Length: 270
Ligand SMILES: C[S@@+](CC[C@H](N)C(=O)[O-])C[C@H]1O[C@@H](n2cnc3c(N)ncnc32)[C@H](O)[C@@H]1O
Image (cartoon, rainbow, N blue to C red):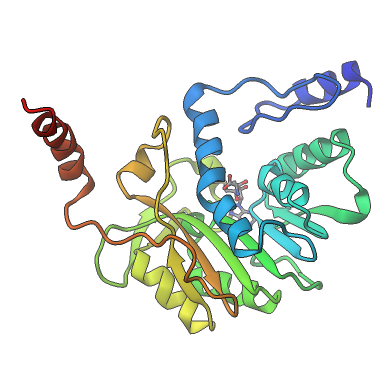
């Protein structure tokens, strides 16, 4: 695609939440430093863990990206060697963005497809080995149905990135989406505690690891820093033992944040 045509098509969208760079030098609009750091750190957090579990590549795997938005994680999956990626999003605008990104990247159309639809009503006729459920579980009121449909799609591995309740028991907290624009089914959503994610996954035959955070910079990531957001990998067969699991902090995040500078000062002998 010619650079001027790509620029024109990118500019026709009201906004972009991800930064994409294309071979012809065209990019989507720059993001604020917090958002770009967030995507970088999320990639190093859960996507690298997925690759580690799969032996460094997604070669030979079919990937389903639920709530794919502009196809950012679908593209990571394709570039990591996935045989095929299907992205589904309820908003046509995001599916149009994803299609533009993949076309401009020169991706082989035989290796991907994007479809518009509410995941709870969308027919998934094919089988997938890996399901990306990123930023979706905390946007829905039907966590059990979500697991049902991922299991029906054949998932062997599910990557979940979600807001979590800080409850130490297995609960779902009732909350509501802060932005009415984001509502697909209901404004009310159910936010799982980390035990609830594991219990839900176990119901469908998955082992789960809560991934240990490895962020080097929490700019734009205060939800992760406050342990209000975590990622999980659920697996039916592959052992999760090699993945770094998050141990539940003894102190709440804010106590740790207060203690760290004091401990450093003590070490410096002040
Ligand atoms: C918070 S964004 C997450 C985007 C991306 N997966 C990520 O983690 O960076 C949630 C996405 O899920 C989509 N979405 C929310 N509910 C949905 C539903 N029931 N069916 C399909 N897509 C949905 C939204 O349109 C939005 O693009």
